[in-house]
Length: 364
Image (cartoon, rainbow, N blue to C red):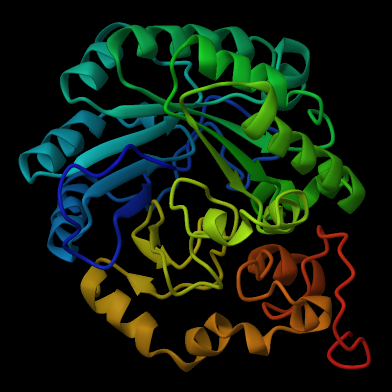
């Protein structure tokens, strides 16, 4: 969930702390990494605890309160929580499928200046095959309304083998409606997506797609928004396509290629029930719960954890990731490695690259 430049100096260790506000959603996207359905989870934080979470985020020192789902706009108390966040000086961004962006909800998003991003996976045919009939028209209508209100943040597309030809469409929409960024997110086999592994592009398909994204960001479009590519091995594409500019590119905060919570330990995500995890997706790596410990306490706990210290050190990676010369700037997706190899230290199967290191070591 990328956001505009921060309005003030960072006070805490993280610019943004995100909350999966609900597991409920009016859609049934085939690749959903949450396995969201029509009903909220029975143990979701109520309004009282939602307000306490906002307090903890402010005390933790984050500048941004990120809200996602499920579909966060189904929470009836959402704007009570957003109003409280704004009172505490937090900026708010939100990721939605766009269906509910209208009427009073749209008015409130504008009233509280909520930077709102919309999930959309290509043109109508491709998008609706993944997200359901009618979802494309709803998303585009929301994008247009948010743009008119001046609060359209970005467009987010999940990369599957059904929409590998859709990046141009996303970029054109972003250009037309003045989005601040486009976000391309690799498929992570968690939630419902774990049962839809056939949607995963092959490593070779990823290579073609990521090279095309590079072309879009550098050559074909003269646009005024950022390309955020949440796919760690995109780093390799940049190195191969522009060796001289590679080091400078790696240091640009406006481009997200390596995992923003690189090998964990650099990010916190709060689930709908208050559990805290070190990644958008790795629910089995629970650090604790905000009802029992504050975010500050949980952050300190994670920093002291021997497991996370080990996982943050690329020298502990196994398989081809362990011998790869790019492991210090890429590292692969640890959640995908765990889902598909059974080890958080294992190789990322989505990457086609064969490292130049000693293949006699750590290749299993």
